[in-house]
Amino acid sequence: MIKLTTPFILIIAFIISTPVHAQGGHGPVFTLATPTLGQGELSFDAMAMSTKHDKQAWMLRQNWHYGVTEDIQLNLSIPTSLRKIAAPPHGRLGTMMGSYGDLELSALFRFFKTYPGVGKRFESTVLLGGSIPTDTKRGGIKVGPSVNAALVTGYASRSFYFWLGGGYQYYDKRGSDQLGDIKYITGVIGYRPPTFQHDYPKPDWRVFLESVTEWVGSSQLNGNSLSGSDGMKTLIGPSVLGLFGKWGVSTGIMFPLYNDFNNGANREDYRLSVVVSYWF
Image 1 (tube, rainbow, N blue to C red):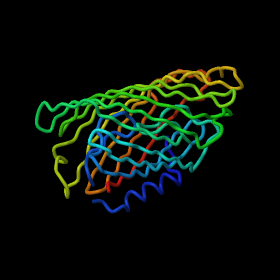
Image 2 (image 1 turned 120 degrees about the horizontal axis):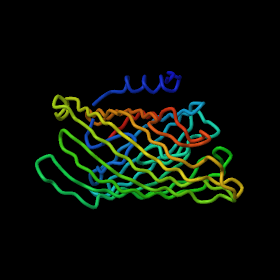
Image 3 (image 1 turned 60 degrees about the vertical axis):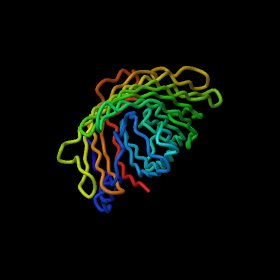
Image 4 (image 1 turned 90 degrees about the horizontal axis):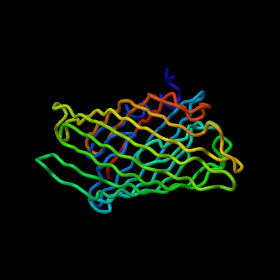
């Protein structure tokens, strides 16, 4: 059961009181997707994220996105911890960000696109990024910088969406410690009801079902593999995206479908995200 803690209530209140006006072009909350901003476009996301294992962690993120061309996009994700836990679950928390406490810079390159009909497209995008930690230790393990690469392909129309992707994140050593690497695959299907297939000033809403599977490698502490730190987990859940004028609001939650971590350190009761976006 999710408790309505003070940070969550403040976030919801902020969203409700935000003047709505939106834009188009963004997608799911947790999974890889192919869209990129148009050339010269700039957007900003204020994101609140939470996960829970025994104790609840909260984090705010400032995400900046810039379209260099219509097929190349730069991203910067800056974390701010609201409520830390000593050993947060290890894994990627979204498309443009690493684990809790990672400042990440990345780039999207859409290298393939074709249009089989009006309002329909097949496309593929690659994601390359790197991160530096804003904390020194997680679960007693010293944290080093990381690199990440991913590939995603899919289909989008005015009514239906489908994306499937996968990636790999590697953490460098810090002294004799090292966080385990992360292999992951993501999948998402989306639907935009006919009622919301209109341009501004009418609202534009779409719903998604998202899934993430992560294989986390064994972490090292003082040069020794940490028993039980490696394993696999699959999370699945719904999300929703609303666009109106220059503003966007999205939120999603995923719950564990499968988890085989022996010591429970990387287990998650849920993964939650609430995002307010603005396009300049």
